[in-house]
Amino acid sequence: MASLTGRDLICTQEWSRDELIKVLELAEKMQKKRFDKKFTKMLAHKTFFMFFYNPSVRTRQSFECAATELGGHAQFLEPKSMRLKTAKTAGETVEDAARVMSRYACGLGIRILEDKVSYYGEGDELLREYAKWSDIPIISMAHDKFHPCQGLADVMGLRRHLGKNLKGKKLLQVWGHGALSRSWCSVQESILICSRFGMDVTVAYPEGYDLDPAVIEQVRKNCRDNKAKFEITNDPRKGYEGAHVVYSRNWMTPHAYDKGEFDKQGEVEKALKYTEWICDAQKMKLTDDGLFTHPMPIDRGHEVTDEVASGPHSIIYDVAENRLHVQKAIMALTMEKL
Image 1 (cartoon, helix red, strand yellow):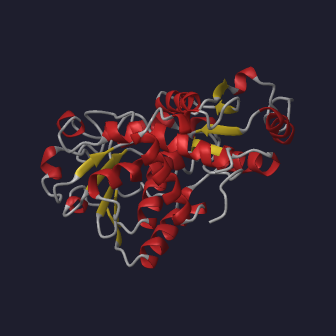
Image 2: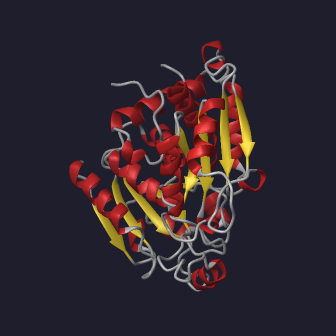
């Protein structure tokens, strides 16, 4: 396997399964021996830039902790504190910003979500533009299409609770009604990476909440390649039957940008009408003793009940912790020669 040094991570689908396993195995070692000296100097004197178009709780905390625990430094950046060119203002181009930042740091993470873009895919285009001009790895810290660090954290949690061979296990990726109007990034990353690891995938949502057709087609192909099942249902209960993992998450409709900007209020008003789309104890009884997971923050009482989110089968805090470990592994593998 070739070295991962310098590799961009924009979507897990762009890395081989063996490369993803390499990340997961290193993350698992780092979790077991968190402050072992062989890990704490890996990025000594190296800086990782964190470029936040959108605020975050876990992402900033976990990346800063990751850099510190590897002996490096994470520097927080925001567009408002930088003179960047936009459609309405003069300023530095992506080419110039990327080339200069490459001279300073050893890695660059970018987070840009639904309300900071004017159409679906614009955030993905921005990351790829930075990757085009940068000499350092570009890591998605969540953007409008994908969330690779979350996807790896999800799989790390499933490997811990279901065993390292996930083939034949069923994932239910189910829409949850709520007042946050979320992007597709976490759910699309989840079904992509879980189908790569041989899981049967069911996606459940009300009519009108279709995901990216290109992503769905790739998931179908992943499932075919692994002789796994894939299905889509518009029934709020059917998908729970026999599930080993339930991942409830609100997401926006394909029409969220019809007017050239993100219509958050309209999306929220629409979503709150589907009250039957909540993950609750009665639905979880239909599963095969299923786990519950969510990337957080959770819209409790809408996406899922407290009884399920804080119940004995919930792995939400394990998965949240895993963000630290997989990001340490990603940074070590892409920013250092291992």
